[in-house]
Length: 219
Image (cartoon, rainbow, N blue to C red; front, side, top):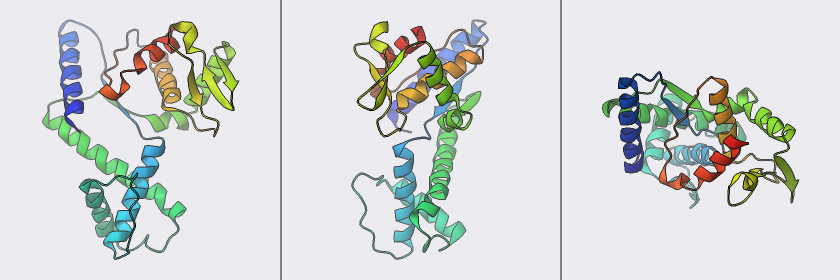
């Protein structure tokens, strides 16, 4: 967790405590981003450091995660698994390294938040939206409402029709879903769970998300 996460945690927890004290029935939830390229980079970064710790000369890519924490995670794998993965192909290794690294980091986040005295009622994984087909169902629902169209091989949401400054890609021409696509499914999931009011606490890197999320909720 960096300082921005700490600020968001403090603001969110304070708001939740105030609302509970005011008599509201509410639930706090932590959204775990565990899908997409960042997870592939996380798994591969850990795998490369693992091989490096076991004596291989590795040319570490600039776009991978270079923090010392990756070495710590890789070292833990060496302690637990030895050289079990050293001679196995990359595609066979990466699922394990992705999950191990994610679980390790999440455990650290939970420990930090506990020390901050910030507790969540639920921990929600982005991956679960793919596992139960929520993402595909959300796309199908939007298509049925006439809110999406195809252009240049990609699938777009007509968010400009709902006061966003432009339409947004939800499925890239490669077939890969965007983060926004997951966010659509996640908010639909929260509505389907019966929540009447939803308060999102977003990081500074999500400042442009407000208009597009308002657009999709209106749609």
